[in-house]
Length: 378
Image 1 (cartoon, rainbow, N blue to C red):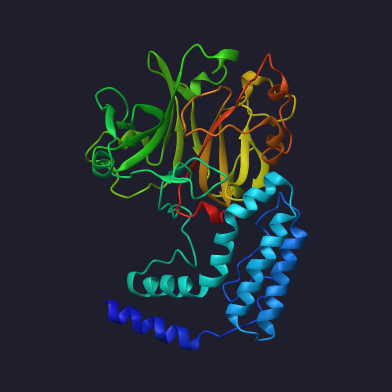
Image 2: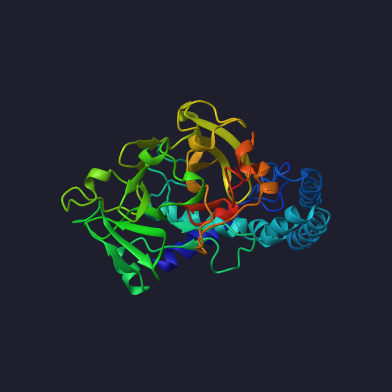
């Protein structure tokens, strides 16, 4: 089989055109930089891309063009404001690699499509999202092992990596596992030992009356804590050996609490008016937020009405979501965006965030459903 795949790669490589102008796409793989860092000044980055494409068109050689592109990106990143600069630097290598290696990756994927019939490179069934991973925690440094960390998607893998059973199907909806006692990321496995969802637990009696009575229906009351649960399969099937799904990671996203259930659209165009569009942030996606009463989320939203979650869409497809708790929670899994950064995620920043009588440090958790969040360009 390996020899056959190698032969296909060689044949495809022979027929692929070399050094072709890609119309501001950065090389033959058409790495699109126009939609990459929308929160930044795009001008210098786009100029890097234009120069790179002109270089390709002039046939100066791929390596020379790619080297010039990397140097140009370094200069463009350095010229950015500090917080933007750090994100740009942290992802520069990924951007450069996408240009240097795109041809090889496309060929490998194409060959696998030929032999295994996987059409995800060209089309995607609305009911069959290409969720091939489960990662948590955004961070400015992609090389920090705590950031963009892949979590086990089978019970066997979880046990082998030290995760411990917290509660089982006789107590809650699923067999739940935690790592080192940390309940910020609780893995939910079905009766077959396949990932069925993810949950977070927060203590009761938090400041600012969080979670408020308005949003408590999204949570489950488990005595000493509230849990918020996201399922990637039909929640009814989780503890049934006959109904439990065999696939990883799932084919839907359902937020299910004791009094409210949210079925999340897999495509951005199908979202209801319950959701209010926020901003695009590279390595995350287009954010969507919610007012729990269903009206538009504006700067005047009551703190008690702020829904504790957000959705992430890239290229119109759901491939992530997360929690946003009005509470200072200690787990290393959580992110704590400062007040001055909220404008990167909201079109209209809720005023209550800056009122010390209504909010303090925000704790968020980004949850990614695919393996390459660094390529989430919105």
